[in-house]
Image (cartoon, rainbow, N blue to C red; front, side, top):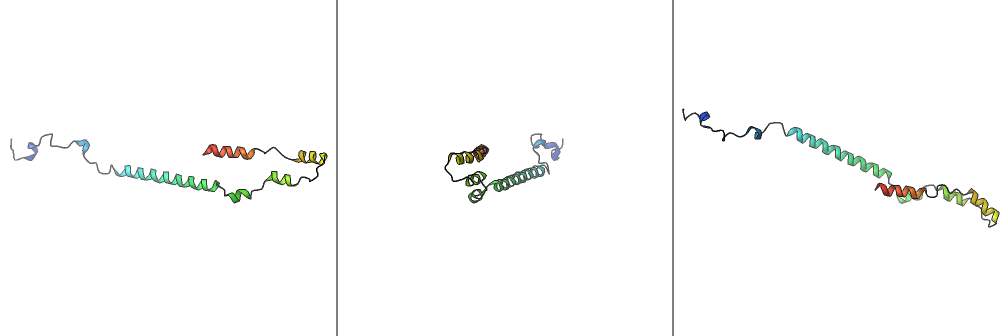
Length: 111
């Protein structure tokens, strides 16, 4: 054995394990996937925020919405006779009286 040859003097302990060696290009695809996922998440959050802003109404917009129930009450007569009161009662539409409460309950449940 010749001690001047470096290949023969190396022991297996001096060599790094092959699993720990840096593999060129192995980090690039992982970084690209992380960036793509982050962009998709941010895009989804932006879209969701835009949709929420479209659905919200200001107080003035709600106040200016037409109210059919109020309009029908304004067309009632002013007489206090029993016949006129019964006629006004028959023409009053009470079917959608609680529809606003159902809408409010639905919105509160969606929060």
